[in-house]
Length: 314
Image 1 (spheres, one colour):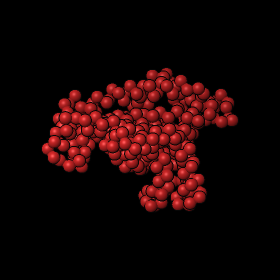
Image 2: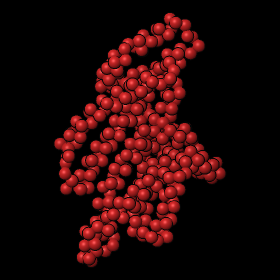
Image 3: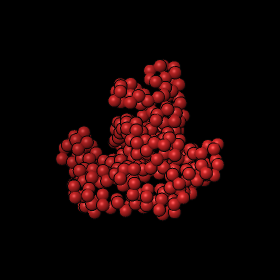
């Protein structure tokens, strides 16, 4: 297993380098001058030249890129043009918030989506299957921002059960932290649960019609054993891919949800950075997000081998 993971990591290195080139070059194409935004009203030529020299913006693009990559390899993603803080520090501050939100949202997605998909596949053609598909379609269709606003009105304003917005660090007050994250996590989780339900249903339908499932039933095994021990284990292989990719998507930051519930995560950070033309922050977040997706794919491949050891290493 360690050799397999090491091989995947080696393959990921050129991918990350290619992504870094695109990240760096594409932000150069964005309109506007970050120095003008940073200078504010004081835009005399001497000040502008000083800022460009300070942030090495007068260097050729290839020099800027190699300097950025070299510093990134040492854990330095640059300095924010707006706050003058280290980008690595900013990301380290926001990452725990986004990870907590992603884990809680994924919990809702898995708890709702996978059982619903199994039940829908097992009861194919019945009213249960029909209801499950309608609910899944509704989850995919309802925008997160609308559901978030409705939940704030119902749960917070009318019932007063949970805080409407804000964030409490888990290390300061675990209970309060979970309470502030419940609604945004549920809003994100319901949409992901709909996606997960559809994939689980499709995978289970294919597995339930396979020969080894019919053989297991012919041997007299109970339906619970057939579904859980035989069908579900093999159906989870494609579902694992969906789960890991959804988690990577959540780590990228749920922009609208974080804005609605005032959660200081990756989504809010990248929106503020884009509006303020804070290119160093945008580069750092996009690069970290891309690395997170690659790591999620490697984790997915490793889980494949755990679920099905017969898979051939490639």
